[in-house]
Length: 193
Image (cartoon, rainbow, N blue to C red; front, top):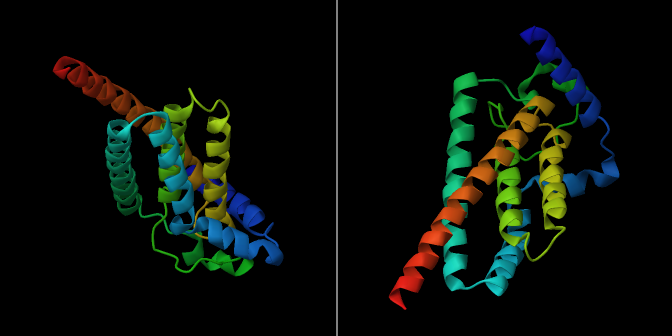
């Protein structure tokens, strides 16, 4: 059963990876780089600051930082535990396209997928009262980052699906933490007035 799932994952990977078009390679290589999202992160932090205050912004930075550390360490732990080779390390990759700067050794599950979906859920949950369509836009952004990992040849579809699902739950959990801490901050502020 596990072998059948892995073969299916490989077949779907090769299909999706080979859908790539040379004229669009630059775009997906750019999207897959973490630094590309920095302007979006700065813009979202500006929106949070604009709709709240400096304390809320500081709390957002703290919770996002904790969440990124959690997703990164959790992803690294599972990669070392399962030790599933990335597709770019497999012999069948001669039939695929490898475009990334580096391959890495193990890939289950995708760190890009868990972190981008977690950030999408957390930040869109914070901003949803002010921007009603932000959740859809953030999910589209997370999906593009996640798909780019298949496009450039470093993750199987199963890696990114698992990472995306875990990211959705992680983002929701950290939003609950953010909401709890925000109430504590607001209660402490009101008591000092």
